[in-house]
Image (tube, rainbow, N blue to C red; front, side, top):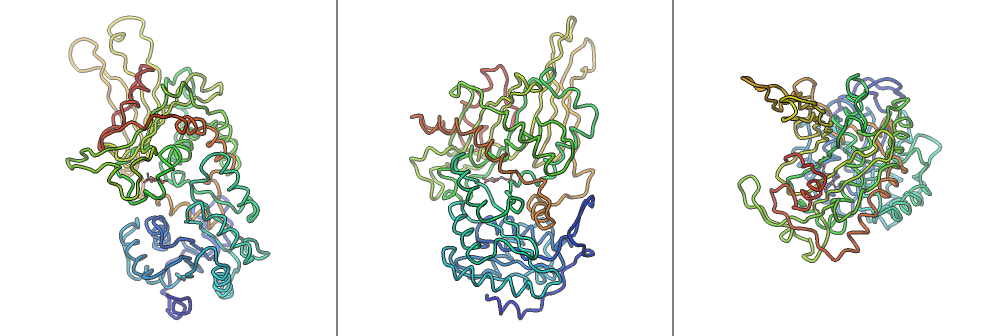
Length: 514
Ligand code: BG6
């Protein structure tokens, strides 16, 4: 498919809401200004499973700008049309609608070429210029780097050499996917490269967990309600558990995952962001600066609690039984080296050195091929001190659970009297499923791509957040790299390695059941 072939198609009109200039103020759902979005790596896994389906969802719900084009850059774009249609049919949140797809497809352009070839960028510049000339507002470009981090430099260099990185007319925004480096040192190198090419305010670092509606709800629940904040401190909270359990394995991503592992893939970004949202102070303003400032304070006060051999655990899955089926182990994942010490499970204990959180452990765990897909944050309150009587023998800690996925909602565990004689207390739970109350929320990528288009960086981690997060986990990564021990094995479909249970047991606590 070439640009001119595509140009000849007559795109169907996409549904759009009334156009605005993209300046949104307090509008909860602003309309974006005309723009071209370039996806480097449009044939890759992320673009096919998440980005293009999310763009389709935006088109379907009328939230793309009226003048919007998507330019895909790939080494080989054979069958792109069919590939993208399949992706949309399989992964979009909203139902497939042929007219919407055909309207969007007519606005997708392909540049084939390698990222180290200046002519790829020269051809891209021509296409973007053509598109700009058809627009009422020209020069707005988003560059989405959906490529391995090792190619960031090449792509940034190509954009700069073609003069696409900055412009006197319109805005330029670049979206960078994690991993943001391999550790603190490499993330700084990466940031320095980005900073040479793009202005700081045009860099959007994506952590898709922040685009999840339930994650944004953490701040709403904490700060819009009077009952939680007075108890939100070391006097009343015993500990916090943050779990991101996946039932899937490597899903063909061994090439990316081997050498990265669970701590870099999930803890450094998604879990530390969740921790920051749970632990941060109320921001003075709920704008990008206000929220970032408070998250940075928490991340800079977060540290691993040791000794690391007792407070952390790592594992690799072996064959096991999931959902009644024999499920293969890591050794059978194509492309994963049998000698690899890369962990598919990580658990660790962190502390937040602030007055509010003095002495409160934060237990984090994540793993692939676990018993269940579940992401949640459980805040366990201290067990009340009953002086006397029957209550003393049946203490029930209150637990407030933020359920991020798959059942999105909130749950409060409390103790209640069991009917009948005596005063026997049993835990019961009060629960709320967001989907039973609210309309379906946009998907995470849908929300974040829209935010980039309207220039709202609230849900995008800042450079400092990324750096502090590396500072938190780097000592553990070093510790594991130096250790002769291999990650412990755990069966696919289990709750993780025994070492993770021991981490908790040493503190007299237990993980919540998966
Ligand atoms: C990504 C990780 O950031 O998050 C993947 O790279 C992981 O390994 C995914 O599977 C989980 O995201 P979600 O939204 O499916 O929970």
